[in-house]
Length: 280
Length: 324
Image (cartoon, rainbow over all chains, first blue to last red; front, top):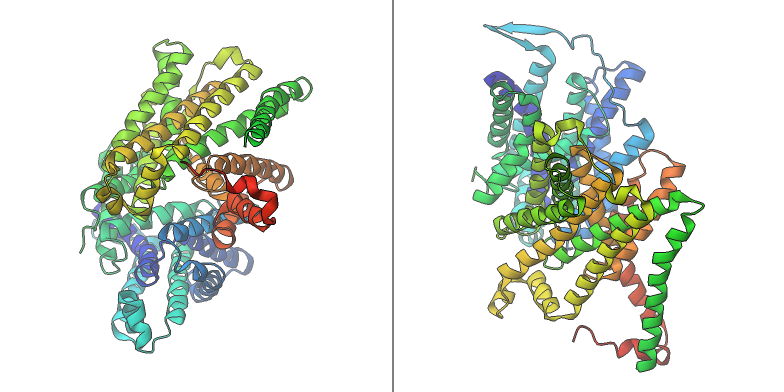
């Protein structure tokens, strides 16, 4: 049970770290975050079905495509509400989310699709446990990317610029940092990370236009647990969510149904008891 | 002044007569339009009741929670306890109000985005619980007894009455001293409190009024469509619709949410017959477009149109007391 919870948290942290980047650096709580994940998943699906490209091998292409799409969305809409009231920003991304989801429904219908990769059912025996190969691969990659992002933020010039902008928009611009470009970059990166997470979903679960919202909400839960905009807390918060879901699934009768309520319950409790988040 | 008041009164009466008579008259040959009218009025009631809460700065994503609570309370009481439907609907409204007061008190400290996420979590938690518990019919849902023997024209008059009552409440709120209290809280809670506004009381009151109408509308919907399920009664689409209509029509007004609801539902109906699937895309598109290009909604566009008319022509409009 513990292992299932941990494995699941890899994908969660990859999804949420992108959202945390958008919230932390730009200050935009992106309700459409999961839609980029959904589009990434469809991209992975179509590349696999039409051209036989393995979803894992397609990750660079997918990431680039979603990065460009995210950049375009930023230029066309997000950029215009940077100085608007917080609620307008929220409502705009909410509108984007509804728009993208229904666009996907119009284009590809609401039916779930499954990409059957050759190694989908393969499993590895690790000690007394058997673990699915796709789950292990996804967990490893997701964790590597999340930690890679931390390294970028901590070590590179761009990463430092992002952190500077996150702390103080005006101060950073006085130091000669092109704030607008950093925002564009951060938003593109944020959506690209969601897109990558989506392509990983193609590998293990079914793809449908409705998956986006679920992951947006789970990413919200993780961010609320970590503290809004706190990028570093995301990994721990993902573990909290992954483990509590697995716990409910295993120990509560008919746990499968209750598990989908776990993250809402966590959001409610954390917001009511400690709105600053648990990990800061 | 009196002449203008007469004209306004006459117009209002004419509109009222039209909404009472027209759908009933059309019903004789085209029952579909009466059904559509009932849908529109349900939607308008949700939109306007959501707006009343929003006037205190609380942009909720939990409107479906009160709608669903109203629906489930009424259906459970009428089918399991044998209560008459009217009593069931009243109980539905009461339960919604109690839940709203609880949620309102719990979320008092939360602002903006935190408030929105917490309310969404509340609503979805209710959905998951209803989906799991066998007493509430779980995922299969419940069958509801028909209101007024399923007589559509009478049902139409019921929802029209509910909406009219809400419209009066909304109109009164915007003309009374409450208007100032709500606006002050929305603009800046701390300052409002310093100026002597009882912030807690007004925020919770707004929640209660808003939920009262959402709850009774939910109960009404259950007894008209005769079937409820967690996915529909607690649907996020309900909360989204209740929020997009006021934003599109014009926030914090009485007419805005009503007009927004009618236009949106009509647009959705047209899309439904042309693209068949994915028609809620119109909500997403309008929400984004309105935020980007017309922040005041239709009401804002209307006001700026009025402002373009040369002065002498709109002397009457300027003398209008704004909530004094």
